[in-house]
Image (cartoon, rainbow, N blue to C red):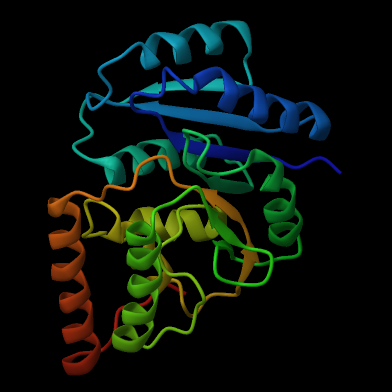
Length: 243
């Protein structure tokens, strides 16, 4: 079966693993005989990633190099790619990380479930079949603790609240774009899943490889602030939601 789908992935300093990642994506696109990939690059990238993306786009029109100099953080990069995909009216949009963190071979599972009319398909490392590979215990602890704390304070019931591998229907993506997201770093994944908790969603197992054990102090502080903010909103005011 063919799908009108897009993949959105921020690309920053990906020169080392560029071809390995692109080869994995190309293999999936070839097998499915459909799909478009939006590679979003901003000023955070200091190596040859932009040139590599632009050259690829010239040789293979299934790939689109999105230069986003106004992007201030990874969340902006995602949104730049989302807008491109929404403008092109792709029926399904999948968000994934570069750097071999996410396995392109898992993309067809996301698409088959979106085609079954799920609004969102969320990748999970903490259900049967999912895993975190090549990671330190600290990084794994942060991911699991973030999920437990988010579910406790936000009232969600997902197995994984911090994964960055997820898919949306076009209608749901447009609602995300119309919402004023507050996160600037890693909490973005949690914010999106919290806001979409009332949609028709499903979690699927993914294998996640952690290229770096480090999470910046700024990202952690932003996560703490926004978790407190949404907890306060939930307790004192009507909890925000995207349906």
